[in-house]
Length: 285
Image 1 (cartoon, rainbow, N blue to C red):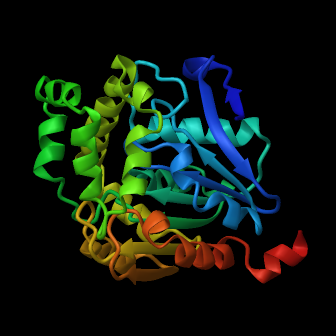
Image 2 (image 1 turned 135 degrees about the vertical axis):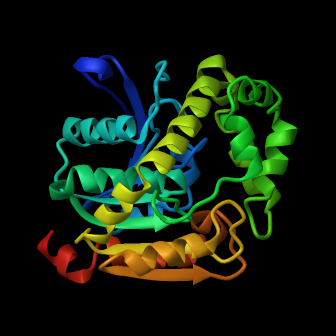
Image 3 (image 1 turned 45 degrees about the horizontal axis):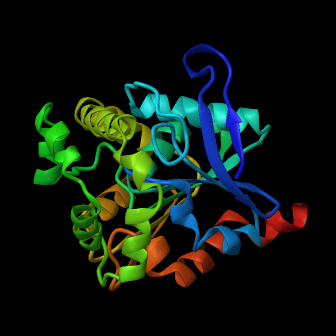
């Protein structure tokens, strides 16, 4: 499995693990909090028939390096830009799931010339009234979060992930629990998770207005896919954000929770294939 090692500044020596499929326009899939590249396994092959697709482990997650942090949106944005530059990619289509949506939104606002289009899947972005759950708030509390993180053995994690699905599929939940569990449960993995959660909370609180105004001025096409039964990020959040975006298509999926790309993989793959590499782009390639 490929990885690159970044050079220079605070990223010197930081390893980024990723998966790659296909050829054509560059598409980067960005996971959410606690996610990893392999969670896109149902989508890589299908999208790879239309584009050059990369699924990235963000720093702190999966098989990528886990430096001390802090893990702000700005930190992830710069790591994503270093990833793009290291692979000598041009303009990107960015696909963000859950908190990965906030990462790709922040990237688009910071590096607009490098973004062709955006996709949000069950995403959460600052500025549109998202209220974190009680569990999120507890994890964000210093000391309390560390105690809870130590209790996240596979059984408890399985229960939490099952609630993310409208109709849980045991095999899918089991995969998300077991893949890379040792890295996730390590001291560095837990620290990265909590740092990300806390920094995101601060970004959402302190910069909501700035993000809302900047996203309203965003000129790139946006495709937002959200589950009607999403318990993690309610569909009302997607609807509120979509009302403020200039060029957006919003599609809500029935019988779908927080993982549209898993729960309705065939439908999502079909929609995304047409969006990330429309006919006019494919002919140019």
